[in-house]
Figure 1 (tube, rainbow, N blue to C red):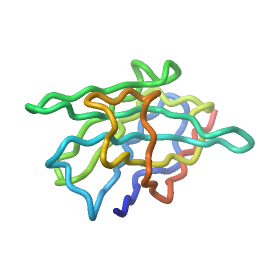
Figure 2: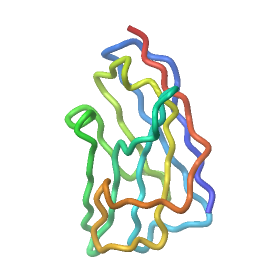
Figure 3: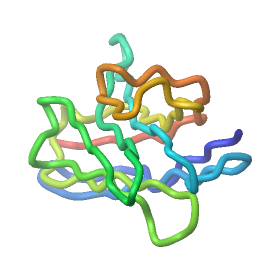
Figure 4: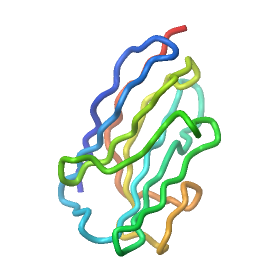
Length: 130
């Protein structure tokens, strides 16, 4: 499984970015749990958002409290991609953002807290200036 993130960059506070995670060696055609994590300098890595398919075309999206209402996770139009749309960005959102997958998922529905990835991308830098 290979995960490649893209879309990071420098943006002013209040701006928007959309991160994309392209997965290879892994298919979205079966139930899956995928998420975005971030790590700021000097801080521990934290979960940002997760996306879990629950069968029958249904899915469950979960978010950290710090990004609720500002970030949206969704499967992209390109096959095997998951995007993270980030709006109203704040300087405290500055971090390296990582895409990660738990495959196979342990639970039918995976929350952000439950997500325990076994595959990780290399990360993409997001910098928000004040």
